[in-house]
Image 1 (cartoon, protein in one colour):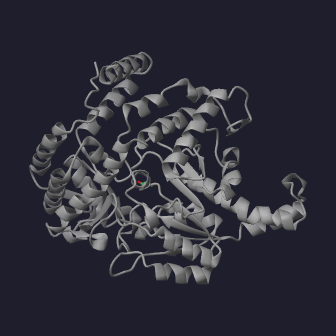
Image 2 (image 1 turned 90 degrees about the vertical axis):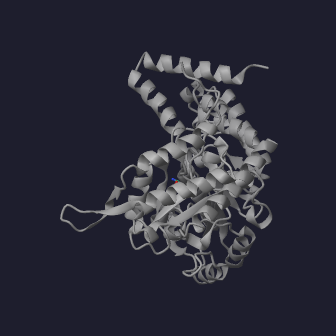
Image 3 (image 1 turned 30 degrees about the vertical axis):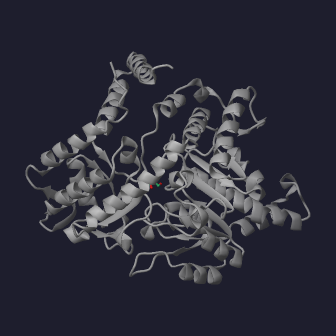
Length: 480
Ligand code: DSN
């Protein structure tokens, strides 16, 4: 058996030498990024650490190949190896998630959502419209036909979770493309509990009658009952689209099963591959057979040429996620999020919804007298990498915010467990308790500047270093 650590170390050391021979500053930044990631507590809920096998797969000549189209049906010659790669990525995805159909081409989660929107419009609106118009061939449409079709397509409705309740920009946020291409309405969460209220979603759906009901989230710390969401969608004739970008790893790892697994309930499921799923940076769409042929035309109708090198890495990551060890990892991600939440609660910090049952925690920092922006910056000074996030009905808006979103997927990959996440909560509370809001140049209260107490950053960095040293990142990777 080859010594994988030695191979990885020599592969990267040599690759960096090759890069340095052309642009040494990029080689240096790459080394520095590894060192920075090794030396900080990464708590960004949407980040992770992919395996060296996944990372290495991305650095190949598959990047040089154009392959618009789909497996066996390309607009370019010479795509036989890309076909192998894409078919394998899709096969692993279907098997892992129990999906009828998988599309591995989206370059990101937003791209995956755009493909989903486009395919639902094509399947639900354009198809029936063409039939009604007595034409099966879109190329035969007259200008007047196009105008009517555009009117139909532009008059569709989408209902999704609002951004400040934890939804994503692409779930109908007005300034986003999704809020412009659809007539949109949003559902929020209960103002008292912060929890999703299915009766409210159902009432809104009955009144609004959306073509698409979007479920899923980027910052909601709870599980969703997708069987209930499907009932609501069916009652009003909507297509249920679930964006599982954040929790795909928990679905793959069988932490979310039954009603909490979106795949058996949704018509179309979108995801990223780099968050809790721990693959390369990219997106994917899963769908029922009914939607397969419209999703399949995502490229070139919505997407530019597929990133074949990334699809290859998706296949490797999905093969990893099919191993039993990934289920252990996913369960630990959820257990660690609970430990983190308990660590905050016992130190009297306020959490949106009062806790978590997925991979993320949303800390309301207004109790510390800070905005999310101030908290994020002070924590970064202390080597704790987080991102600020709105809380429901946030008085500080989406830029300054009143929250900090924290996720466990990355540090769980490093091997952090219950006690360490409790200590992480303690360090975060310590930093926030010793941070004061700053003042503006005019002397008023600032939402951005802050003053972190003397010596706090160094003390917290030292305490973190002990944990980080116990759980090194890419332990076998030694750069020469
Ligand atoms: N940027 C992703 C996240 O952090 O959740 C969503 O787009």
